[in-house]
Length: 201
Ligand SMILES: Nc1nc2c(ncn2[C@@H]2O[C@H](COP(=O)(O)OP(=O)(O)OP(=O)(O)O)[C@@H](O)[C@H]2O)c(=O)[nH]1
Ligand SMILES: [Mg+2]
Image (cartoon, rainbow, N blue to C red; front, side, top):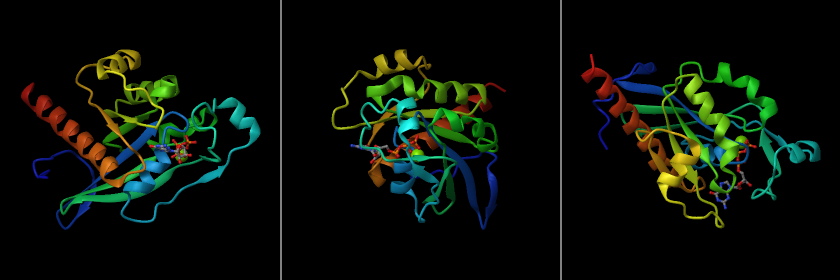
């Protein structure tokens, strides 16, 4: 796919390659670390710790009862979408007690994926609020689990209270091609937004 017209201020590029910082955000246990792991070209850096009983009680494990680890700081990976676009991926922690880290983590990010588990929609409300508060453009990715219900996208959009111009796509965070498609949807969204901004000048 051609991203050559993609013209946003990113991080320092080298040899014509643009480097862009992208956040993988979302509620507790929505599959952020799984997505960074599945899509990264390099072995990702992860900062997972064993979930304690205390934190499990806090974090509503419905649907992710077999989850044993949680991100305490961040996940880091990278993927080259084509010869001219390198994405640096930063996965956020999902547990509320680590959210104080979010301000620093988002610095310089061009866009974000907000992962949503439709069985526990509310767990991603706060992530969406943060994107809006920090003015980070985002797409919503519904990470489909075997027992996820198939809701119409409009219903999801209403429940999450997001405007019609924000793409909502389904994915399987475990699958590299599927996760890559979400990143492509985000880059398209960023491109569309910059085209709209240029038109309105
Ligand atoms: N069936 C299924 N399981 C998944 C999928 N994505 C993640 N999982 C599982 O769901 C659990 C949560 O995944 P993580 O990637 O740790 O979620 P996270 O968002 O990084 O979690 P925190 O860092 O604790 O917020 C893990 O046990 C995964 O194996 C999926 O698409 N389908
Ligand atoms: Mg994680």
